[in-house]
Length: 230
Ligand SMILES: C[S@@+](CC[C@H](N)C(=O)[O-])C[C@H]1O[C@@H](n2cnc3c(N)ncnc32)[C@H](O)[C@@H]1O
Image (cartoon, rainbow, N blue to C red):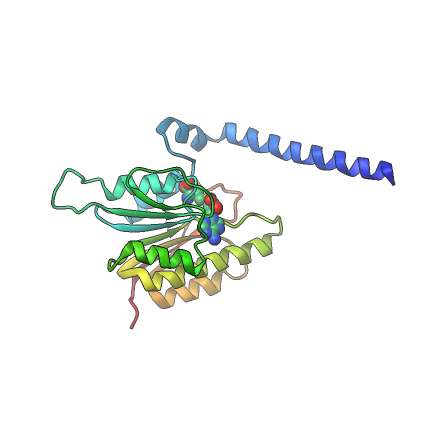
């Protein structure tokens, strides 16, 4: 019995060490990780949003954008840059970026950050509404991802729950014709989410940027031209 316990402990230790070595090796070979460091983005995810934006032209000067699941902050960095791109031109108002995350987020100049906040909680959503005042958002983004349990189907259900919360909140805060972009992990419930979005947005499509790893189940659902609530 004792030997069995020792064997299990050693296997667990080396298993973890092996997978963290694989992760390190993968990071060191990843060109986006290197570029993120060189270009001062907080993480490689910046390139996903930059790529989606280059193709779909979502971010514009003067917009109000809500970034759900923003830590460590690379999407918020991109947003702040794009919505204030015409900063010297007085005809454009300054943009507003609001980032929310469960984790601590280091300050980003030009962004309002709600650190250590659960986006799905009523308290956090009330706080976002308070920050908005009587303004509405042009764009709601969600790159939120639940902590992986290792059970694909359970993780899929959890991320769909997060997206459902984003869509519900978007119906309250979005301007007519506004847009939502949210990350999902593909699975059985994605069609339900897609159908719910089709009822609210004129255009709904799937988007997979090159910076999103090929072997990942990650994909983004983009809903454009919010129909507004009647
Ligand atoms: C992939 S990371 C986001 C990366 C980010 N877009 C960037 O570019 O830096 C996913 C984030 O979602 C956050 N998250 C997961 N569930 C959340 C929740 N209920 N409320 C707020 N943030 C959440 C996690 O804490 C994590 O930081």
